[in-house]
Image 1 (spheres, helix red, strand yellow):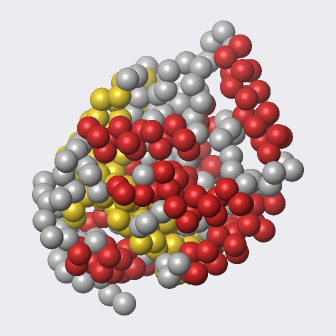
Image 2 (cartoon, helix red, strand yellow):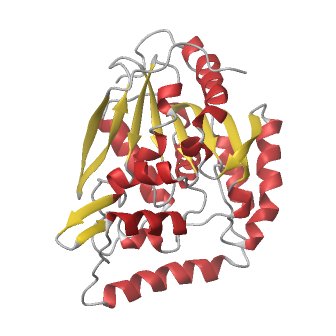
Length: 315
């Protein structure tokens, strides 16, 4: 299967959406009246995660890639506030409201796909298509382990708040590249440079990573398999799940999570959604976008663009 149609022009504009604590920043590709596609990156990445993929996708769409709160150039959350999927779901609603989006598609990578899955479950009337990049859209927690995870996330936040001063480490640019690649072995060097365009701030001593240190804490909003399957069934969107052979299944932070994925995938298949495994690793969409672009293009063309009758996505 080959990606069809001319490539999207590479002209990009900066996005800024006001939120109560600052702004959500991002990048926009495509025509003003194009079908809106919201792009949500993974944990510790930023909207640059989609910079190599979007130019390969249908030019009729308008791609809105955001830096999630605490990442890239977006504002950090106020002191004392947790980072979790539900807070990010509220951010998606804020962005959609500010941009007057009534219905739209979402492409989500990793954590961004978890946010997309939950948003589509809570606001099914707003999402017409979902593309999960190396993610299942939901990642259940074993109920027997739930208390450990919730306590860990709570303790991490409280201990962080007790510190009188939190200073980020300074790096040279070369050190920052090495640090990012050491922490993310699936990134190519080119991909690391792309992410660091929005992932670094220049300071007197060199560079510091722009993301909020609190994004490293355990997510305190968790769901069981039963709850995840119920949420999954609430979505009305067409779904494409693209899994990398060397991807997320090798990166589970909690060993018990692996046993839940067959049920999640079977539920997608039972509802006639498409699940595809491609060669590559967790960042295949950034490192080798040509591998997945044909599948995403086909999804957008058959499930979104072919059904479009006009600018009804605007409020």
